[in-house]
Amino acid sequence: MSSSDVPAAGRRRALAALALLPLLAAGCGFRPLYGQNAAGSSVADQLAAVRIQPLKERNGQILHNLLRDRLNPYGQPAEPRYNLSISVSQVSEETGIRRDETASRAVLTLYASYSLVDAQGQVLTQGLARSSSAYNILDTSYASSVSRQDAQERALTELAEDLKLRLASFFSAHAT
Image (cartoon, rainbow, N blue to C red; front, side, top):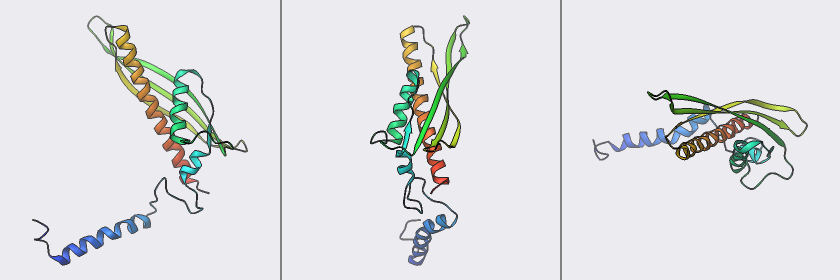
């Protein structure tokens, strides 16, 4: 059935129903995560006020940079309202075994224990985020190393996105 086959009154009713959809969504308590809250600030403003504490080791440094790009696109705040502390650990588990009993596949799991503290030192939220990424263990050590590095980068990127979403959800739920 083409649009010319639908009566004009039916099309008007369908368009009116579509126009009411945002109002119905607002009536059920839906609000955009990154939109302005009642106080006039936004979640993005609060995320930009978070100072990310330096992290140890290479994975920590990469995660720090990924988070800084996501939370503070214009640089670390000069006067932060919040401090974010993170510790990163990883576990690698061999999952694929060849006939000669050597591993052919592994799963790398990264854990990030985090704590968000306000300027007065009160812990606002804390938790444990996890990300996993699989990679192939190949016959040449260089190829295996590159494969593992790629898995680490993918897991760290996913971890940074997860942490940003957790913080944004916290700020949205506790809008001031």
